[in-house]
Amino acid sequence: MPPRISLTRYLVEQQRQHNRIPAELRLLLEVVARACKRISHAVNKGALGEVLGTAGSENVQGEVQKKLDIIANEVLIEANEWGGHLAAMASEEMDSIYVVPNRFPQGEYLLMFDPLDGSSNIDVNVSIGTIFSVFRKHHDDPSIIDPVCEKDFLQRGNQQVAAGYCVYGPQTTLVLTVGDGVAMFTLDAELGSFVLTQDNVKIPEDTKEFSINMSNMRHWDAPVKRYIDECLQGKEGPRGKDFNMRWVASMVADVHRILTRGGIFMYPWDKREPSKPGKLRLLYEANPMSWLVEQAGGAAVNGKQRILDVQPGALHERVSVILGSKNEVERVQQYHQEAA
Ligand code: AHM
Ligand code: MG
Image (cartoon, rainbow, N blue to C red; front, side, top):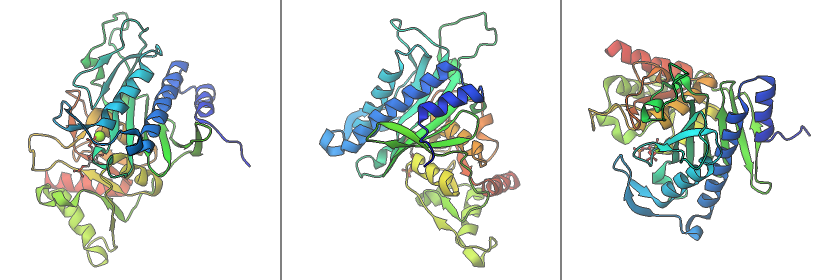
C-alpha cells in the first residue's frame, strides 16, 4: 500500500522540494485546516449540537445569519489570530476587516474567507463549505510599514499565494492550491487528519453538464440565455449533444463536482439588481475558486475578463461568475464578446 500523505507532509514537501511556500504560510494553512476540522465537527452534530437555525442577525450584505455562519466565523478567527502569521482577516460575515489584536504578534499575511458557504443548505443537511484565500500584505515601498487597512485587501486574485475550500458533505474534503496544481485531502475523522486523496486534479476541457439557477432565466443577459438555450436543445440543437443540469446551491459543492468530473458553473449578472455586478463575492468566493479552477486546467471569467485580473474596489464587491471546463467557459465568453 502506498504511504498515506498527510496535509502536514504535503505542505512540508511543497516547502522543501518546490520552495513554493515559506514556513509561515505552511503554518497558516495548517491552522486554517484545523479550524475546518472544528467546523466540520459542528456541522456534523447538527440539531444535536443546537447549531441549526437563524441567529436573529444580518450581515453587512443584508443576509440573515445562521447560527453556523457565526460559529464558523468565530472558529476561524480564534484559530488564526494568535499564530503570528497574519496581519488581518476579512470575512463575508464581518462588515470590515479584523486586525490581529495587539496582544499577538502581527505577521505578513492576509486571510479572507466565507466561513460557511451555501447557508441555505445548512438546515436541510446538504453539503456546505468554507472558502478561503491568502494574500501577502504588499506595499509599494517595503520600507514603509503602515498599519494594516482595508486597502491592503483590495488585490487582484492573481496575487493570491494560497486558496482553497473545505466541503462538508458525505466526506469532509479540503481542496488546496499554492500555485502548483490542485490537491484534495479527505478528513480521516478517526485520526483527525487530512489525508491526500488526489493530487494534480485536472478538469476535462469539454463537458455535457451545466450548473446554474434556472429559476433566474428570465433575468439573464442575452449571451447566458443563448448558451443555456443551446444546451437545452440537446442533440437536435447546434451543440449536437444532450446536456445534464446540476445545481446544489452551495458554490463549494458545485465547484467540487466540477473539479472532480468537469462541468460549467455560472452565477451571472442578472436584471434583478442591475447595479450589482453579480451575486457572488469577488474576494472570498470567486477569486479562490477561480484560481483553483485555473490551476486544474479550467477557466474562470466574468463575461468581460478573467476573474483573477479584476481589480477589486471594495471588500464585499460582487462579480459575475462563469467557471469550469475550458472550452465551455471560452464559448460563453465569446457569446458575451459577440453581443458587446
Ligand atoms: P452564501 O455565501 O450566503 O451561502 O451565498 C452564496 C451561495 C452560493 O454558495 C451558491 O452558489 C448561491 O449562493 C446559491 O444561490 P441561490 O440561492 O440563488 O441558488
Ligand atoms: Mg458564500
